[in-house]
Image 1 (cartoon, chains in turn purple, brown):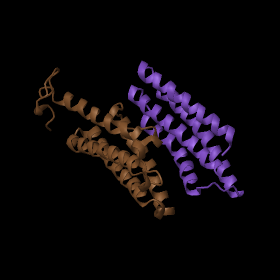
Image 2 (cartoon, helix red, strand yellow):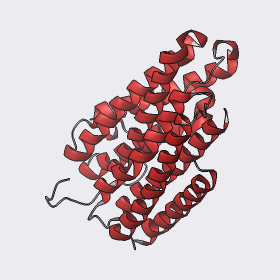
Image 3 (spheres, chains in turn orange, red):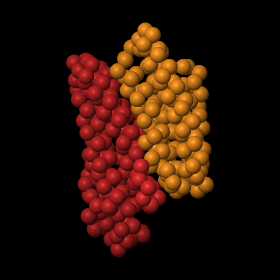
Image 4 (cartoon, chains in turn blue, red):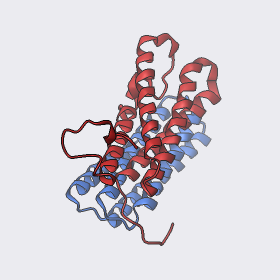
Length: 119
Length: 153
């Protein structure tokens, strides 16, 4: 876990969630832009997960290793899970689903970071 | 990924997604807790596993209602049971705190999850109520009718 990258990812996910919620309310959602944003987040999450694996291999020992791994795996799965559901769907509820997913992503990244620090 | 044209997502699907998130949250929590130190707080950990099962059932039932409109009664029963569970476990965790040395998903009414566990079944019930009204306008008049027929299914 790279602290600054994780913080930036959390911030971006929250901003994305707010943007998606506004798009849902105003009915201006375009799933293409959301998919691009989610893809960018996913890249950051993959880099962060690789850094975490390297850190673990290098001897970093979080207090709850299994929990840490669970958060890392879940953090990588949320964006794809949202992506396959909203692809090609510009409806308000697709925006709502993506907003919920982004918020969940932010929470998971924050928790992963907390677990990581508790060495 | 399917290329077939789909109808746009509705509120039921978003709700089911929420349940899916909690299947993962409660399920992995229960597996980690029971797998690594089951003896530390058996009641709380068992309740985490129970919550995970409730969310799996909720996910399946809500998806069925969303896809086919069938099984509304079962989904409603699940939401009521879930809400009862959250309130019961939430209250018990406050009154008998010594039986809950470690948190479970529904401890303190799901405060560890921003109280989403309380909100989820309420949203479920209101959605089910909404689609029941839409499917059977004759049994759910617009104003003031509290006759039992409005809730029968």
